[in-house]
Amino acid sequence: MLHRVKKQVDINKGKWIGIGGKFEEGESPDECLRREVREETGLTLTEFQFRGVVTFLCNDSGSDQYMYLFTATGWTGELNPDCSEGDLAWVPKGKVLDLPIWEGDEIFLKLLAEDASPFLLTLDYRSEGERLVRAVLNGKTIGSNG
Image 1 (cartoon, rainbow, N blue to C red):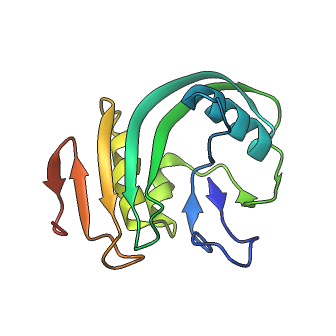
Image 2 (cartoon, rainbow, N blue to C red):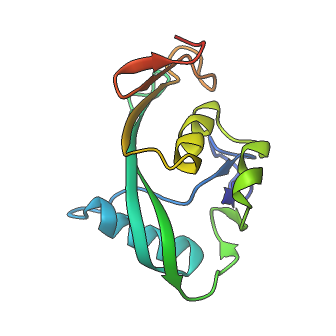
């Protein structure tokens, strides 16, 4: 997990998030995954699994985002703790939900922990900014926000 504490202006400041980033031109999701993991951690993935797609509907910014989710079970190299994005740490799966994370991240992190089939999840933060106002999993509104 990545604790976002290094950038002064960061929507994720103080939160724990998974590693990742934006696509480079002409890059596929798995190519982006491998590059971002290598850049942020120093590790080279050898085994990974596609787990789902998350759509973030964002507050009036016009910058809705799509996140491809993967989990990894194989890698080579040593973790490089010197990440410009924040502090990297191995966190036991059972402790991840105890960290300060985004409300919507809790939904997909639980799905990953439950080894759910690949899923489509939409997280709507538009009306409240940092507060999740709606979550839609595989076409069905979930939780008490809907």
